[in-house]
Image 1 (cartoon, rainbow, N blue to C red):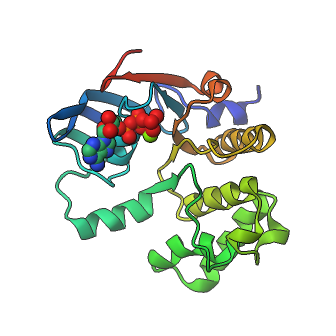
Image 2: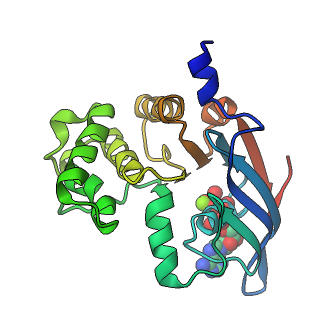
Length: 233
Ligand SMILES: Nc1ncnc2c1ncn2[C@@H]1O[C@H](COP(=O)(O)OP(=O)(O)OP(=O)(O)O)[C@@H](O)[C@H]1O
Ligand SMILES: [Mg+2]
């Protein structure tokens, strides 16, 4: 391994990007998360696995500030998010967190290029610089000749790569992905997983990925098993 490669891999000295302490969450009488403590460092790729209903999506939504815990602390990129109001939270989310969902969730009436640009425009970037960055990212995803296609004109694997480009456009501190390859066939699945590792190597990107895919889980830096709302190893 070259020195340059070593520098892009996470070490105990890398900055902490996500820290949770004692996260608890209930829906009605059902306690879904029972005290989650996690520390994730810059450049780490962490997988979260566990049976259906274990609380994986709930945890990811809380880390992503889309849902709030009943108790516990969440720090992302050195910022404690608990005290923020909704407006501050959405601005923080737009700047710091990129999401990739199982079903791409691209906007159907916009082209691939426009879909990727939208979070940058929301962050008040000029449209010329948003377009330049979106084009670079789509280029990196091997989608240069698909930029003017709308989602319905893209394959499943292409749509997920557009979704990854969209997640990256504001240089987020972390990318959170909930079964991102769950809707893809084997070939596209492998392509998407390779892309995650490329992005880590080239951009030192941090990922938290909920996945049922054992091959992906086996290749990540850390596999966290969630069962009945607790981390079991
Ligand atoms: N908004 C909600 N209201 C009530 N119950 C909820 C809500 N969201 C999730 N739950 C419940 O919380 C538990 C955990 O759900 P969660 O979606 O986090 O599971 P998961 O580990 O992601 O499962 P899967 O692998 O099936 O996606 C489930 O029992 C679910 O029914
Ligand atoms: Mg889920």
